[in-house]
Structure formats: C-alpha cells, structure tokens
Image (tube, rainbow, N blue to C red):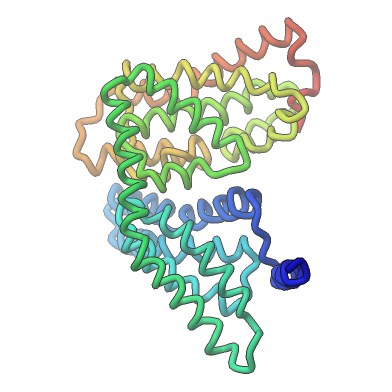
Length: 350
C-alpha cells in the first residue's frame, strides 16, 4: 500500500501536479484575474472609450475581447499550472463551455473546472504515442463534461452568494459597507485576487461600490503613507499598480496594515450611505481599485450603460472615496502609529 502511494506521489511529481493552497488559491486565481483583465475588463474599457468617442472600430474590438473571457481565464489558469502546450490550448474550449454554462457565476465555474481539466490533461500528456489526439481529447472531454454537469450549479451558488451580499448591503449599507470594504480591500493586498473574487460572485451595485472603496483605501493608502520611504516610484507602483507589494513588510510588521484597513472601514460606509456609490460596470472592476484606474472606469461605465444622470455630487463622491479620503486617512493613522512606535522608519520600504 505504501509503495503504491509513493508511486502515485512520484508520478504526480514528475507531472508537476502540485496539490496545494498556494498553487490553486494564489497562482491559479491570480492568473485567472489576469485572464479577465486581458479580455472582459480591457474589452469593456475599449468599448466604453469607443462609445464615448463615437468610434465603431473600438466598440467592435472591445466586444470581441469581452466575448472570449472564458477561454482567456482558462488559458491563464493553465499557464499558471504549467500546463503543456496541448493541454493549454485545449483549455480554451473548456473555458468557453464553463463560462457559458456557469451563467452569472461563470468565472467561478471556469476557475474550478479549468484547474481539474488542466491537471488531468497534464497527467495524460505525453504518456502515449498518439499524444496529439489523447491529450486534447481528454482535457476537453473532462472539462466540457464537468461544465455540463456542474457549471450551472456552481454558477447558481456563486450568484446566490453574490446576490446575498448585495441584498445585505442594500438592507444594511452602513454595516455591510464596512465589512465588504475591509474584506475585499484586504483580499486585494493579500496574494490572492480580489478582482477574481468579485467577478466570481458578480459583486456589483452598492456592494461593488464598497468593494471599490476598500481596494482604493489599500492601494492609495499604502502609496501615500509610504511616500517617505519609496518616493514617486513607490507612489505610482502601489497607487496604480498593487498594494500587494507591501506584503513582505506586512509579514514583518502586521501593524503597517492598520492605517489603510481603518481607512477602508471609514470610506466603505461613506460610499454606501452618503454617496450611494454603485459599481454597475463589470463585476471584476469592483476588485481592481485604482489599478490602471480600472475601478473608476468601471463606475463610469456603469453610469453610462445605466443611463444615469451623472451629477457633480457623483463625481465628488468618486474622487473623495477613491483618492482623497484614502490618502488623508491613511496618512493620519500612519503618523499616529509612527509616534506610538508601532511603525518605524523603513518599515514600509519596498
């Protein structure tokens, strides 16, 4: 029995099938977010730009990009799992099936099913003399078969959870504004994908607005409060890139995470209760914050597509929630903690 287990472990190792939380929860999910960005997200941005400028080509190009979100996510996941070429290319069909059959919860269905299909495909890859037939056939049949069996249910569950969060936020905008803002913001800084989580749950509406607030609090907060240590380069890389760059510092001194998290707890309910900030663009934008200004573009896209009469109050709210308040609040909290000795010089150095 022990010998059989060792034989299986050896086979898995040779095939680079690593069953771990890091491989699936961080590598695969992060890659999935990149696939979403390179398809649905950038497609929506291009389409919106085309609509505003009256350029039909941009509208068409954006539509094509958004239409291949499922295949893009699946291929990205396969790449993160080190899938061989035939497996990687076959995942395109798997992603298309899972995303379509998963409905509103398509991204979550793609995430779960693409991982299984990729790993199964890796196991059979180059094990036969007719690999060019066997590997893509197994990968596609496993992936599409799982999609047919489980994607609708996965989508329904994800949609229900997302709807519950959005319903709760509508019912209790103050409390849920805090909860959603803090949790999604922390997910953005952790080595997991807040964008993928928001996309998988279809997080839009007021809850999406709270998520945007939390993500902006982390990114802008860390960027501004660490300006002394990191200068303009750090301001841009964190403010328009990702606050994930601070994770090594957070691990060394968890107290450095307090200022932007407190800022998120304040801006979240302000977004939901005062400005009624809603994300009615792509759900993935809810978890992007100020990364490439995707969160703000998503809010604007939602305004346009919903036919909302945008007022000066809406613009003021967007600027305050996404930029001004995170910068001011995080800096104030950080200075208080510096004076207490909880945050020391170079604790935020990238």
